Amino acid sequence: MQGVIGAFAELDSTVHAIEDLRKQNFSDITVYTPTPRHELEEALQPPTSPVRRFTLIGGLLGVTFGYWIPVWISDYWPIVVGGKPVASWVPYTIIGFELMVLIGSLSTVFGMFAVSRIPRLTMTVGYDGRFSHGDYGIWVPVGPERATAAADVLRKHGAVEVRNER
Image (cartoon, rainbow, N blue to C red):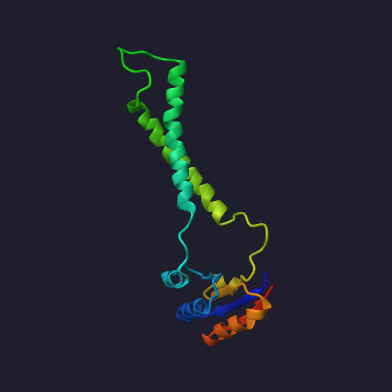
């Protein structure tokens, strides 16, 4: 994957560079930062995470199995107590709730790993070790035809270093 990496010393210049890149229709921007900053998140405007769908589907499956398994077991081994129904929803609510939480949380963890593509078997392109020590980095994956435009935007906003990466 080809692209341009820019290293910035200040947060404000990084935010302005991201905003300018977005205005020029560079959409797939990756930012490396030593600490999470809300300014960068606001500038990137990331889409809503699809992990919540994993949680919803896992929770619904969990509560369904939480009710279905005891009803199925009660059908095979009925315990008739004082004329009460064999399969009643009231005592099975606890099992349904517990399985909803268990399967929902496990599917959330699976969804986080799946969406973030962990484990990554290849090295991250565009990462520099100094982005963990105080500098900010912007990685813009572009082809050779738009690489100079992206590099010019990064330099215009005060990038300490701009280089093409492959």
